[in-house]
Length: 146
Length: 183
Image (cartoon, rainbow over all chains, first blue to last red; front, side, top):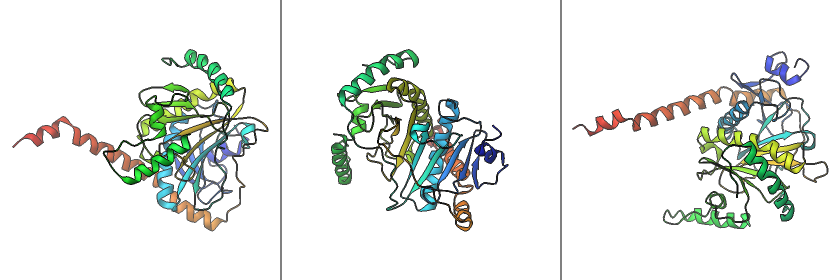
């Protein structure tokens, strides 16, 4: 997509600090980081969300993320790294292009990236499971659930 | 429930006693020992289950094998974990009537249980959950410095992985074993 800023970064039309590139993905430094060394992992083919992405590309992004995490922990003196995807408006996705954020975590960084530990109502959970069970058994071969 | 178990796990890991079985809450799920946990996907390498915290439909994909952090995971398993998360995400969004989700994996910081887990959290307007950050601009000198530290290292990491894997193959190969047996 021509007007997508991330596609322009991938194409090299907008200068960026590219850290890694292969046939499927590009990794660049975020110039507006959550913490120093924040990396944006981008699929080369324009996709807005995970649903539009090829499964191959998404799982490849996971592998590249893993390799980058090794490098980030070794070279940035980070205590950890958080992989975060905001997929869809309700998850506060702002960008028009799918982004896997790799956020280095430092001591006392005060970043709030935790999933809340609030309990899910067990009745609601049961209802979701019942709906999900048949969908999964129909969609994913070989899955027979309890 | 899980957190309590986790604390116990940490304590036991510190005793460093190989005789004692490590009680990892995720390993218990893999082994089918957690009756209340609803498993939504299972194969020989990975398990996905509904996580009873955060929001209805929150699920985690974990490796069957106990691996504490993603950096130690076999890349084939990482690949599979992400593929399974992608397969399940639209189904879970459908079942929870949501259109958005966070995909999260914490390594080290904020990682509660020392067994790798990839989370998908369905999101709704007004759900009170906030997974966001304030982007702050960074000056060019600092960015250059970070670029130097990180650039090219991933390819090196790749080379290292390939070397490690090929050296494994060498040790296991029939020919080498055969040669070792020669007087």
